[in-house]
Amino acid sequence: MTASDSRSGVVVIGGGFYGSSLAAHLARGGAEVTLLEARQDLLGGASYFNQARVHGGYHYPRSLRTAGRSQASYQAFMSRYESCVVDDFLCIYAIARGSLTNARKFRRVCDYIGAPLMDAPASVRRLFNPAVIEASWVTRESAFDAVKLREIVRQELADAGVSVRLGTRVESVQESEAGARIALEDGEVLGADRVLVCTYGEAIDTLPQGVGYSGLHCEPCEMALVDLPDVLRGKGITVMDGPYFSLMPFPSTPYHTLSHVRYTPHGAQPSYEMAAAALRRGLTSRADRMLRDSARYVPALNDAVHVESLWGVKSVPARRDGDDARPIVMRRSEGGRVMSLLGSKIDNIGDALRVAEEHLRDAV
Ligand SMILES: Cc1cc2nc3c(=O)[nH]c(=O)nc-3n(C[C@H](O)[C@H](O)[C@H](O)COP(=O)(O)OP(=O)(O)OC[C@H]3O[C@@H](n4cnc5c(N)ncnc54)[C@H](O)[C@@H]3O)c2cc1C
Image (cartoon, rainbow, N blue to C red; front, side, top):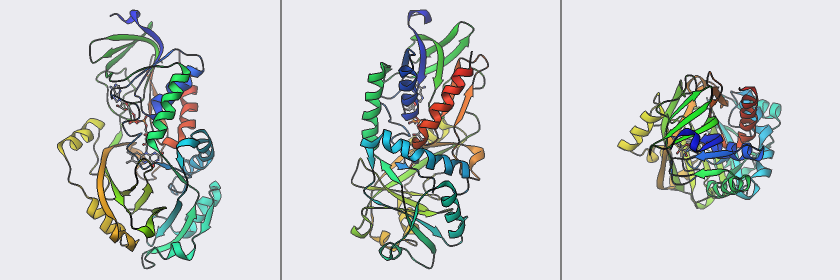
């Protein structure tokens, strides 16, 4: 097949939440869109493997921009994806003594971005070891069910008329003045006016200059799925700000995810492929360490049971390690036909679509 045999206006590569949402958004705007996903189903990468938090901004006291945008996007995400949102749990934040933030600064940031903070009742304060926890609050944050989110996205794509091709891995993208040429692993070649690469840092063998994901920090990550004792059920607990942990309901299962800043990342690699290779070689679980350390802050975690671990790659721009910010990174090829968009957080999809639209408008 030649490129001109099957030409689409826009080809989106990567059927995670970002690529799928972008494909549906562009199709709703009138473009003819094809979505290519290497896996056999949508939202099977980081869009499933994550802590399912709909961020209200509390997580980012060192990046006012990310904190503020999270709070600003919160309600929009909650309304749009209402049927996959779970908010029937108590979302608790606590500040550890000696952390990068103290209770006063945390409260100031929350006030500044308009994120509600309620003083924790005694029943919540009792969960913490006061020797290592300075303060705790009940906050307004939710979780999303990634399996239900996949069904919403599938419906959005169908309604918008996007042509979705699963099990379709892209090997290379080239651009010329006449258009872009997309070579698939099985030898087929597609043509397009525009290409959007949304692979969360996973490399494509050949891409036009400037759109590859350079300067990434890719971590092979482990999240422990844990069964909680009764006293912790119905609660999400995040201890800030530094080498601590967070515990969130994982709504497609009866369990919670436990993620620990020190033990969840099993090292960091300069590329997605190197991180994925480390996962394939097999890593030794650190769930016991996560639980042991977290129980120093919340003693009832001594009675939590590790059920299994979820493994995947986290890709973030390396220069954001210091402030923990999650910017939307978008790059454009010299010819303007090919762009890449690195997913940052599920809940700021509205901002991502806006940024993508602006870049598309400015392109050739
Ligand atoms: C441990 C962890 C915890 C997180 N916690 C949260 C949280 O609580 N809340 C939150 O909002 N965000 C969280 N995130 C961030 C969030 O998960 C990601 O920002 C988001 O899922 C990125 O979506 P995406 O579509 O860009 O990537 P993905 O979902 O990974 O999609 C990329 C897709 O591209 C496909 N692909 C790759 N290469 C090719 C190719 N050559 N051809 C065709 N297809 C290809 C892949 O198969 C994959 O399906 C977390 C992330 C991690 C890793």
